[in-house]
Image 1 (cartoon, rainbow, N blue to C red):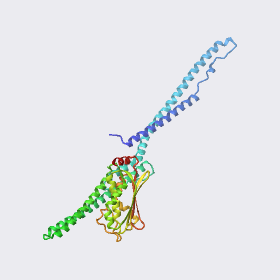
Image 2 (image 1 turned 135 degrees about the vertical axis):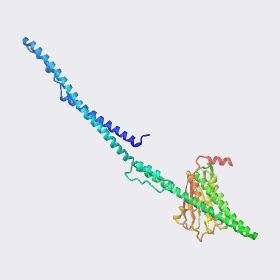
Image 3 (image 1 turned 90 degrees about the vertical axis):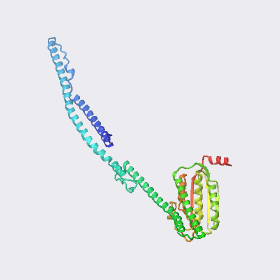
Image 4 (image 1 turned 180 degrees about the vertical axis):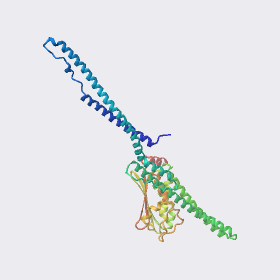
Length: 405
């Protein structure tokens, strides 16, 4: 059985306490010994020296007295040593007993203190075991002083909050995707059932049904294509090739030219070189989504402006358009999957229904390339979206372009 942290802390504290007590007792005994040595002093040997007398008759008596004094000195020294040893032995017993009592009390106190210190960890462990995918609403909410354990518990709560938000977003995304896919599939199935039930359908009716099926299939195809692009950009597995956002924007404008002409939109562009390193397919998709979004969510006779710039650190792609008034509070919501603004009378109907993934895909692609995206509603209606990406500063763009030319 492996020793617990509480037991290891208890033993460490007890050893420290025992060592401190032993040191104090050792110092105390040393001071006691020195005090006894100073107080129980031996007689002065000079007192035992023979006295110088002028009478020769008393020399034999003096010699005898000197021998007696020397013997008395030896006896007194032995007695002093015996008294010191006895005093130290008398102090050693209570000192050892006090040390043993301190060790036992120290073990108990250290056990209680270690348990009190580790109580937040037990709370954290219990909460971690309780929390699961279906119980992400629970939190530790540890109270007490702002120490390392409180900071650890707060960090764990923040992580669970992010996980809960991620799981909620994922569930909502799956539900929205299932709903969006169910609609075109229901159209296809209903059209087929109706035509099969009507045996006398004319060729024109069959043709109309086939067109509805094609339209629904195209909608499902666009939705699946958007989902694949979103999953690819979220995966983080990207190619790292030189690309030019100006070229991507020009291609997107060319693809949207017919739709812009039908709506009598005024399209202006200022496309300066914007070299980046990234996934060319995703960067083209980024520019195409922004341009098509600006063209489709517009009104007849409106305008679209596309610019690309770069400096020493970043390149930027800015797409602005006229259109319906966009509330500032709804701007961030537009970047969530399957989020659309309510249709307004001033906005022309789009030739194909939006999948609701355009700006969500753009945001995911921008994040995958280490960039930023901001959106601001225009005063007269419409939206201005600014994408900023790190510039290619390794010279790869110029080398590859020169090779291609």
